[in-house]
Length: 180
Image 1 (cartoon, rainbow, N blue to C red):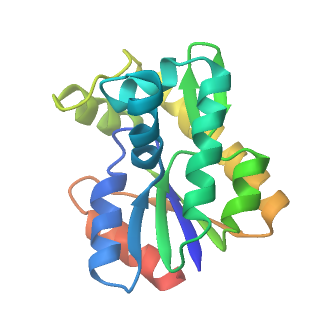
Image 2 (tube, one colour):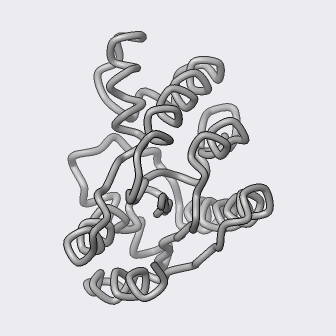
């Protein structure tokens, strides 16, 4: 079985996924990391944040290659994004050719209050983030909901919205574990 756990940057997705993985028999595979390993060689980029600045054709090729690799694995949580905010607009994180390869059972979309996400982003020196406002963050979370529902229509997988309360990621993790 393959499931997707998603959420916008700064929502606490990695922390929640790590807790789910520790308490289950699922291993975690990060879609972006698999894409980055290819992009580093093909496009000589230095960090993951540079990938979303590549032209759309390059991003599509990277998505396709990662999906093929992940589609061969089983019993995994795929850590990825429903949408990628690019200079050209929102790009689907899971376009049709990716969904075909992955054959997903469930989508989990982790959400949090926009002000908490903004604070987390501002205090995270490990990433190069866009200068989003709370309004931008709220919009991105809403866009992700639309994408998740659209992916579900195409794939037949369930959609779960998981609230990640500040300083209590174990609550979000337990909510996911109950639904796996």
